Length: 164
Image 1 (tube, one colour):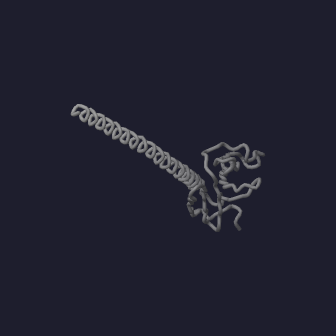
Image 2 (image 1 turned 30 degrees about the vertical axis):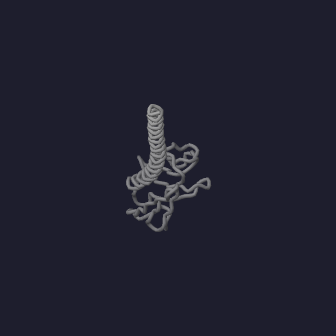
Image 3 (image 1 turned 90 degrees about the horizontal axis):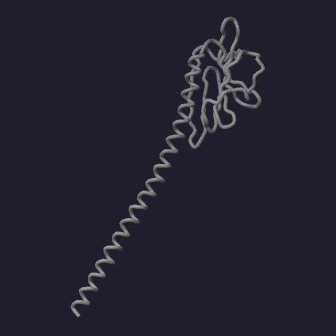
């Protein structure tokens, strides 16, 4: 009788230990799964933030480099807002167009009147949207996505070559 009770007690102890081990394994598994989801979300947010900031910094640096009297303009070409930066090299006028098309920021550098269009630009970086507005001598560059980011640039040279 004592032996049966002792054997039953060992079986209960074994079952309790196995059950406790199973609970521990399940908790560890759920912790790893939840941690993986948190990591994915953080990584996605960092990537979106990074791409938006890089685009804004890229455009701001381009504008600062090309900020000469009358060289900055915002145009609407083929129903797309385009930031145009003009510069004169060896007596010829060259333009840089920065614009958003097909899910990416694009740039086209060409001489004025070359006949090249927006489809000929090179992809700089993927993003969800980019818009430009130029009022007086303040350029507003806005990147859209989950969060909208923007930068205001004061055109020191006096604004657009199309202002009068």
